[in-house]
Length: 101
Image (cartoon, rainbow, N blue to C red):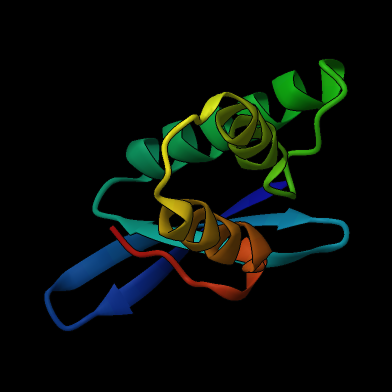
């Protein structure tokens, strides 16, 4: 569920959209307009619901894992360092990172 909060800043007000999902660390994004915050939050929630209807978890790296396995099965080159690098990224927990845009 998303929450929109109005926050006071030095240059005026801003709106923070906060996404809270069970079992996942909450994440947020700040906007200048309330409407932009609501649109972003609605988009994140609809994308999550779409993935869940397809049997995928929106809280994990399911799509990346699937693509990595497909790439590994079709990669015929001799460069084994590329596969090692991809496995490194595969092992990271994406929920530990805070992304800002």
